Length: 467
Image (cartoon, rainbow, N blue to C red):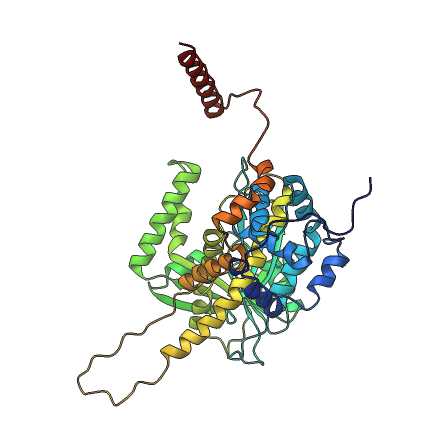
C-alpha cells in the first residue's frame, strides 16, 4: 500500500506559549549555515514530509536527543507531547541513522566557519592546542572512541575535530594547518612527524618530549646526554640550546630549539612523587623508579623564531595547553559524555557529532557573553581614588559558569514544556511508549503482584456480596 506524501495525522492543539518557537527560529536564523536545509535534502536526511512538518523540526529533535541523552522511546514521548510528531522508536532510529552524513556536514560547518573575533589581529596566526580525549561505550574498554581536537586559544573555541576508533593514533595528520599557525602538543605526539608537517605547511610548533622518545644530536651528529644537561641546571630555571632531531621514519634531521625547564624544588618533588605512584600502579612496586626523576623536568621542542619567542615565552605558551584539558572536562560534564549511551559504533559516532553541534552553539553564545562581561569589568571607575585605599581585586570571568548557563538556556529553548491538559489530550498517542510485551525470561514483579492483588480483591468482594 502506498503511503501519503504529506502528514495526515491530526495531533492535539499545540500550546504556543510553551513551544518556544520564536527563540528556536531566531537560533536557526543566526547560528545555522545558510544552506543547512539544502544539505539536508542533498544528503537525503530529509526526503519527504511524513509525521514531521519541516527540516527544522527534525534538527530540533536531533539536538534534544543529544543534549538530554534520550533513548528513542523518550524522544518519541517528548516529540508527541510537544506536538512535533508522533513517531515510533524504530522510526526515530531510522531518522537518526539516515541523518548521519548531514550531521557531520553541519558539525564541520559550525566549527570550521565561525566568525573570528574582532579583537584578534589579522596578521597573526592561530594558536592551536591539539590533543585527543577518549569516550567509553557500555561494556567497553574505556578507549572505544577518540575525539581529536584543535582548540583555538586566542579565539576561545574549537577549530577542528575528528572522530576515530581506538586505532586512530594521535598526530597532526588529523588537522589542516594554515600558514603562521602555532601548534602546541603534549608528549603523545611524535616530534619528527609533527615538525615535518609544520614545516611543510608553514606553521610553527611547541612540542613536549620525553627523555626516551627522540634522539637529540649536536650539529656533528653526536648524541646529547639530556640527563647530564638537566642535572647541572638549578631548580626553577629555564635554559635553551639549538639541537638536531633525527627522525627515523623520514630519514632526515630537523634543526629545532630545545627548551629545558626544571621546576621549582617543591613542585619538582611533588611531580616526582606522583610519577613514582603512577609507575607503581601501572608496573608494580618492584619496577625501576629511575624514570620518575624526569617528573620534575619539562623538555620542550619548538620551531618558533628565537627573536620573537624567548625560552620563557615558549614555556608559558606550553603551560596554556591545559586549556584544552579544561575544554574536554567541560564537554564531558556539560553534555554527560563520560559514557556513551549506546554500543553500536555508527550510532555512537552520530551521537557525538550531535553533541559537538550543541557544544558549538553554546560556545558562540558563551564567547559573546564573555566579551560583554569583560567590557563591564573594564569600565573606568567614577571619581579619583582616595589616598590609602586598598587596591581593588582583579575579577575574572568564570567560563565554567557561562558554559553551564548557556547549556541550560539551550535546553530550555529546545525542550519546551506542556500542561496537564496537553498531556491528557496526548495520552492515546502516548500509550504505545508506556507498554511492552510480557516478559518470558524474567518476571515483572510489580505488574504481576498488582494483577494478583487486584484479582484477589475482586474475588473477596464477590464473596462478601454473596454472603
